[in-house]
Image (cartoon, rainbow, N blue to C red; front, side, top):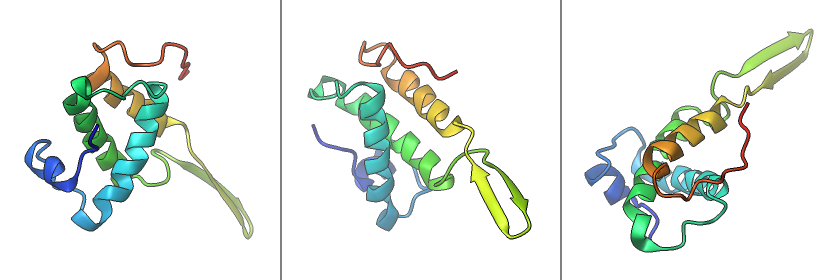
Length: 113
């Protein structure tokens, strides 16, 4: 299976948020997240278009929020810490559900609550 490239991102997904020099980095991260959500079931080309559309949308989410979406932080004096709320994973699942929900490829045992 061919992973979405920048041409697919611009022409098929009609994206334009991610500059070409950063696309591969975020597409690869999106690929790993989607592979985790599908338990590596994306191996055939039958769902390649749906998978690549999901990669593009998730890559945009990751590009716009590289660490975590809706992170919270606290500080005490010189000490500061930022926590993610898991929202990025929920967004990844929503994207996967949008494009792959009717394929039977999503892992059934993931609890996102």
